[in-house]
Image (cartoon, rainbow, N blue to C red):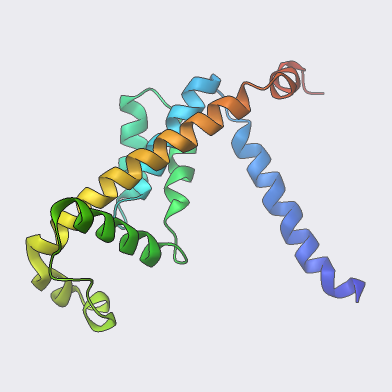
Length: 162
């Protein structure tokens, strides 16, 4: 039974080590929080393949940490993309009024079908993405900044590495 847990334990150890390394990136707490927030903001948009590039560019504009911006875009991943897009569309529809409705599975898997949905669909999706992205970025940046400014975290970063 213990041998079954070994791969999971190794995976969890590896993930923890990578996350620790990510949080120990250089820069002030403010720079790191701005970088993460920039990445989370761009990660909320359905711009697959461009999210990391746009997140890093936005982090440059707000003088944020580039690596944390790239990591922040992971808010949209294969498990969260569809629910996030659905939420963004629903919020956009709430703000702009009902549109043509959320497309079916057949439209979502074919680019031609998505393009045929037009501005009615895209405007609601982009507006919802901007609102959700702004809220998620503000929340993640605030949480990150407060977490990094904790006395325990500052003391650990101030200690020299041996």
